Length: 472
Image 1 (cartoon, rainbow, N blue to C red):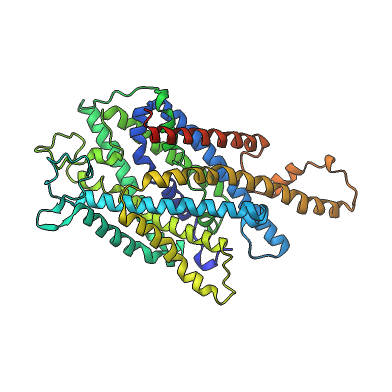
Image 2 (cartoon, one colour; image 1 turned 90 degrees about the horizontal axis):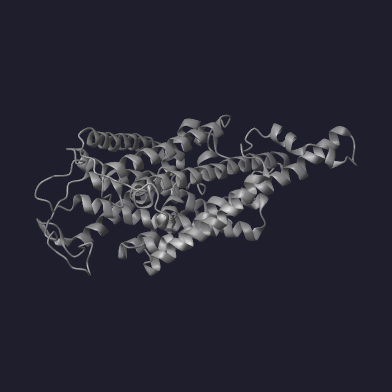
């Protein structure tokens, strides 16, 4: 249970979830929409949003069941996987989460440092370079006034500074990052409004030159491979939603978050594919001035915003980094059996943040191209976290609550030990008592998710094979 001093409102919890849902994935969306077709993208995104939302409601219901069991059994400890899954599935769950989060933090380290490097480096010495062995121009100088610092050195400097600023926050609790989260959501809204406003200006001035296809089936695996994690938040749902003070309208608040995020994805991607004929992998780069160009002919580059929008990913990563790091630390503590009662666990308590920070830092420090390895490892653990474990948890939590607690209670109230279970509408009683029961309560959604997970694995594997063998 969360400490009363660290509780927050449903609005603040919604902001945390919104920031996590609307990560950097939105910036990769326009490029894959353009390649796979805008109607294909809308359809794929709608299906993924729905299924991800179903899984989140499963987790909320499971959290309510866990709290019910703790009250009935007078237990104050124990997490959901330990309550409802066997020890092997529980260990697999925590290992999957840890692997996924480690990969995410490595990517965050790399993306943040790259963004800062590309924005701040002003030297044009690399503009005429065509070295195929150095496509990122890492050996070129970053600033003409400081010839000893290359672009690679600048990347490493920004990486160390980024971790030095956010690293200490991993020793705090999520509630302590409230100001960062609120500032981030304000900057997000400003950035999205700016991008949408600039593209509308391009349409009005008749400078739009995008001619996207509606469907392109050959690029569907790549579309799916990018979009499948667009609504990934399930690893942090318990840590975000548990401290909410009043959970009466929790499902409604989560629903609004999903609707807003889905709307932002569609609006950003849809306006982008019709405004630009060439979309960068990170969409905000379409709004910056080309440093190697002698004149600014980019209609999307607006004074002031050509600096603000390219820095938008930095704000996104800044807020999500602490959530991911704290979630990683909590999962590592559970995996090793951490307990505040045992004295020697004080060492574990203070070493966990270092374990969460230092290995990803070292990986990102010595190589910039980490995405292919991390995405390959994280994709399979990611699908398990997003689809498999929420389904298993809600299925076994429903079964345990109904069979071990509700049925004995009904027998006790009716004074009948040999009551025929077939005459009891257990599901109806369960739904009446649990106000957080998922809107998707029938077993159809359990079976559908299992089938969907198999489809996801096949499509993600196909996407990896295409990348590995360059089958385009």
